[in-house]
Length: 295
Ligand SMILES: [Zn+2]
Image (cartoon, rainbow, N blue to C red; front, side, top):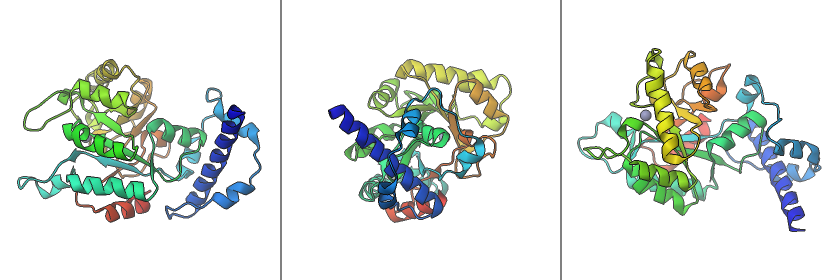
C-alpha cells in the first residue's frame, strides 16, 4: 500500500513539475503556476515508467535541449567581507558574508529548491522533472570560506551545491586560504557535488596536447581519490571555452561543462551550460532580478 501510494505521489509530482516547466518556457517570468492544468492531465504512466528506466532512454538532440527553459545557475567565488585592498573588479567575485546570507534567505523565502548537476543533466537530456523553482548553486576556485561560511549557511535551508575545484590550491593556507582534501571530502559526503576546475586555472582555449593530462586527467584522478566518486562535471576557467575542447572533455567522460553568461554552443549545449556570477555588489533583490532576466 505504502509503495503504491508513493508511486502515485511520484507520478503526481512528475506531472506537476513538467507542467510547471512547460508554462515557464512560454513566459519568461520565474513564477510557475501549472497546478490546475497538471491536475487535468491523465496519469498516462507508460511514459513515466519508461522515463524511470534511465538506461535505454533516447537522449534529446541539441535543438530540444536548447529549447528547454534554462535552469538558473549561480556562480560564487569567495564568501567574505571586503577589505580596503579589494579592487572594484575583485568585489564582483567576493560576496560579503551578510550579502551571501541574504541571497540564500531570498532563495529559500521565494520557494527555490537547489538542484545538482545530475538533475539538470537528466532534465536537459531526458526531460525529467525538476523541483519547482530550481536553482543550482556553484562555487569555483576552492576557497576555504566556501566550506566554513557558505556550506553551513546553505545547510540551514537544505541547499546542496557544486564545488568546482582547482587542484593546485588544495590545502594551501597562505594569504588566501583554500580547502584541503578532508574538507572537500566532507562536502562530497554531505551530498554536494565535486567538479573539476582544472589544475591551475589555465585558459582552456590555450591548451596544447600536453596540457590535457596536466589540467584535466590528473585533477580528475585526484578528485576521484579524494571523494571516492566519479568526477563528471567541469567548469571552464574564466568561463572561456572553444569547440576543440568539447570532444576532449567528452572523451574523458565528462557529462557536461559550465560556462558563464555567454552564448551556448548550438551543437553542444550540454558542454556550454550557462551560469551567472552572483556579484558581491548584488542585494538579494538584484540577484533575484538577474536570475529572472538571465535564464
Ligand atoms: Zn575559476
